[in-house]
Image (cartoon, rainbow, N blue to C red; front, side, top):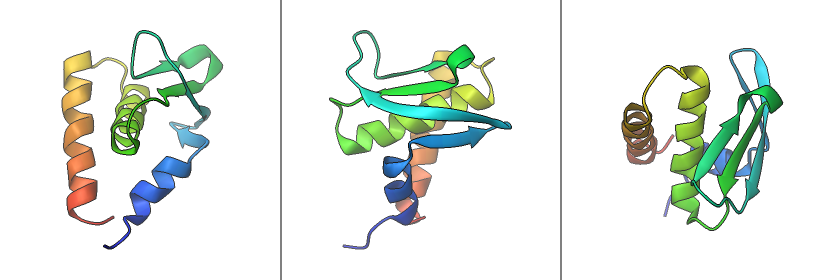
Length: 92
């Protein structure tokens, strides 16, 4: 099976630059969500009890929040799922 390079990189990211700001990425147990972003701390947290694929979707979801925190949660989730499917289907 061909390895998906972009998803492998996503899974290994511990920092990401979004809109000129560097966000640290932390994989930890979260109580009330699969992922969250603490904007003042420039920190993205991902629940590490999810499957690898769900962690990838959650990271994309949080990145979309950072890009445009005006969108609703449902819009952000739909965009994250769609983008994730495009990445997987096209072996980026």
